[in-house]
Length: 465
View (tube, helix red, strand yellow):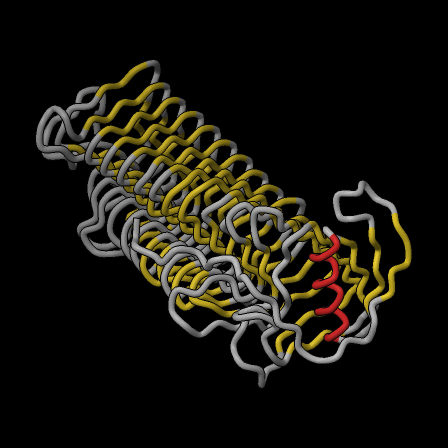
């Protein structure tokens, strides 16, 4: 794991700026966990600061902000925070209000939630303009410390900038529901969200147009777990992992769309070094300058009932560049493009595709190899259609599959009830191989152009023409 400084310590002292108009308590009720207070906060920044301080002192409260008000922070309330750290269970009902740092103010974040008792729920609120300029600072919009909890409901976190986690840095537990994290920037990792704790993004949330100079345009995951469901990750950018970087931990992506993200080096959508599960999702139109238009997988990547389509790699693996373990079930790998190797998938370790279609992928560079699939280790295809893939550059080999090895432990290709048809390359339009491979249960290699396997350096069993 890359060396990073420890998360920011909880702040010991609070400093109130300005003179507060009084916040008005309007009743009691609820479950008692937040102290039972419901407080109306007038459209006055000092009143908001005062109300948070009072809620911390009273064991919690629900703060109702003035409708459509903009609370502008001009100086830090305490250390690097524009507002007092959240120390108890506090709910802030935004009523379409905005909490922002003034453009002319010194650098500070907006919210910090401290453990072990800090629990912040925000609803119907915009958090914007937080800025931290020093190296190794976390979460310009919101920082969630170890043991703390953040819940966002119908919240927008936008236009914040820090070293890690421009919008949100989660070192505790964060749930993002029907919310938008957009236009945030990290000068290192995690333009939208940096997480080493527990993260849930759900119910049509949107992570869009966030940027990271290094890893994870929308999300940088350096540990813990992340579950993204029924959400959109769109137009994010980074050097690696245009949408998501999973450096350590387990990421599950369900029923979501990951589209139009870009990486200048690898992994236009998801860069994986640990464990990623993708179910019922669409990974479409992402771009990497190097390998892995959708993903450069150096961990374990499992894809089920999903579409990985129309992604582009400037190097290898138009959809996926696999260097460890890849499993694909009941999915489509279609319309992807790479320059050199693996228009659909390039695998240099272990890959298994089951009930999957690999179609209409392209290689466009000279001497390219494997428009559909490129394999150097172990590739098992079971009930797979490899069809209409094209390697268009001069000297291209293996329109359907390019399979190469140096001994009996590499270039291990197995076809089970698999169809390799209507693929095109300069030579060996179906399969190019320098190793014999195993064919089971009615697999076919036919109607490829200019030939099926004849361009291979060996005579291939079960393949003629």
